[in-house]
Each structure stands twice: as structure tokens, then as C-alpha cells.
Amino acid sequence: MGLVRGGVPDNGRVSDVTHVLVLPDRDAAEEVAAALGERFGLAEEPQLVRDALAGEDDAEDAQWLVVLRDEDGRLDPRELDAFVGEWEGWREEP
Image (cartoon, rainbow, N blue to C red; front, top):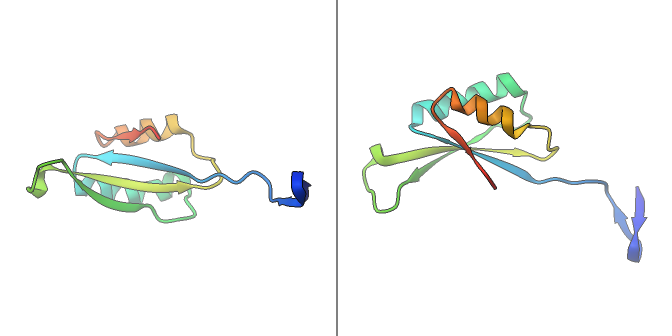
């Protein structure tokens, strides 16, 4: 561990990247969350979040988000784009 200006320890490069995958329904989001671990070997379980569209009360009008942290920055955004596209979803740009 080195020291940077002012004597503050330098713990190396720390990344706190979060990827948000948007899916059309809960079933697709659950399938993606399960498949992500198998395909990419995630250390942490992805989080599922229901995202109701503005002004809509009907659950059918909700999108589902799969949120995953990528602290090491090892997940390739292009690979995630192609992966989630298999379920008619997309990755939100940060």
C-alpha cells in the first residue's frame, strides 16, 4: 500500500460500478438474474426491483430491473447488452 499526497493511504483502484438491466416483466427479470450467475460467475446475487412507469398503477405496466454491482469492473457492458437482449431487455447507461 503506497501513500498519496498528504499522507493518505492509497488502497489501489476501487470501482463501484452498478449495472442496471431493464426487463419487460418479472419472469424475464428472474430468468436473467438466475442466468447472470451462471454466465458471468457473479460474486453477489443481483437485486430485482419493480419499476412502475410514471402515472401507472397497473402491475402489468411495470418494468423490472436487475441491478448488479461490479466492484472489480470486470463485466463488459457490450456482453451485458447482448445477454439481456436475449430477453428483450436492455442495459441502462450510467
